Image (cartoon, rainbow, N blue to C red):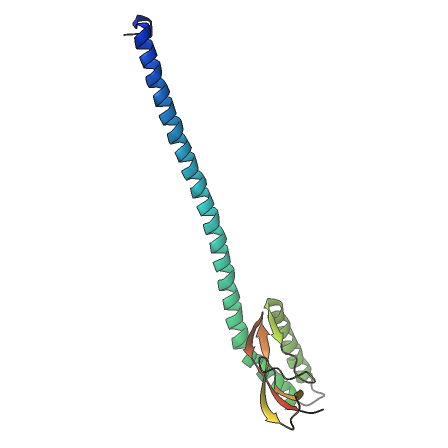
Length: 161
């Protein structure tokens, strides 16, 4: 049967059914659109979280490498202190030590300033005390930070100037 064969009442009834179907379809489409927007937002948040985790993981790996290489820097500095002042080998070791420190500094390693500074128990470890003063008189072992985290405190002699 075609619409032309329907009575006015049947056409009105069919139109009402079509309007109900249209409303239901529009509501369903709106729900799917909201779900799609939520899925997109969830995915964007997931990408941001993954990027943060990736950066944190890279930062941690760099910190761990820097922490391990502090001992290498210490050994190079010991070699420099014990070498003959005029030797070409000393100049080479100095260049290697400087290059290593520069590379690590670019990644976030920083030496802790100690000598002449006010003693800070967060940055310095007093291994000897000359008097009741709070100034760092001498640095016995360099301290290092990575970002805002102390990797190793400076071992220092504390006292008055």
